[in-house]
Amino acid sequence: MAPPLALRPVAHDARDARPFAIVDKRAATLSIHAADGRLLGRTSALLGLTPGDVEPASSRGKAPDALTLAERVTPAGRFEAMPGRNLSGERVVWFDYDASLAIHRLRPAPAHERRAQRLASNDPAQARITLGCVVVDPDFFDHVVLPALGSGPSLVYVLPERPPAVVAGAAPPRAAAP
Image (cartoon, rainbow, N blue to C red):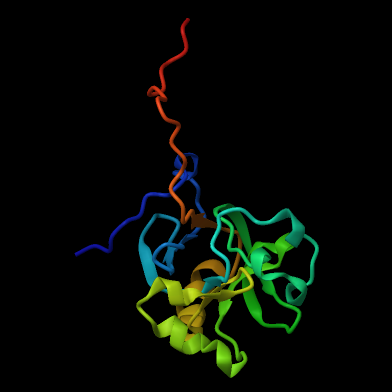
């Protein structure tokens, strides 16, 4: 049986020749896809501590350790991603370099954060702990993320956790009159 194919979340990317990742914040998962849409792997992921789909403007330009609790958001959207290295020289996949947001492997953290246990949990609410990065198991990062996204440009789609607002009484879209 052939592996399942994913439709890209953004229709105009249908002919894009880059591999892509989908971060599902509601399920706290990261799915990695080949450029043709084949699923290469899916895993649980740690996400930004604070729920929300928009990066707070106050977080721009701050050092990660200076972010307030309200600024620790994994923003939703379509991101042009590039592999790189963080300040410690570790390999990461930057999806918003200016905001210091990346997909990276689980790293040592203070014991009270219980990051490994949170990553292993089936409860998406337990996944809220990062400064905004998407953090995955080191083995998945090394064997799925890096081979797919670690050698050149890719796309990262972060799905919103809140459904889009629906305007009461709004009519379905119509074609413009000639």
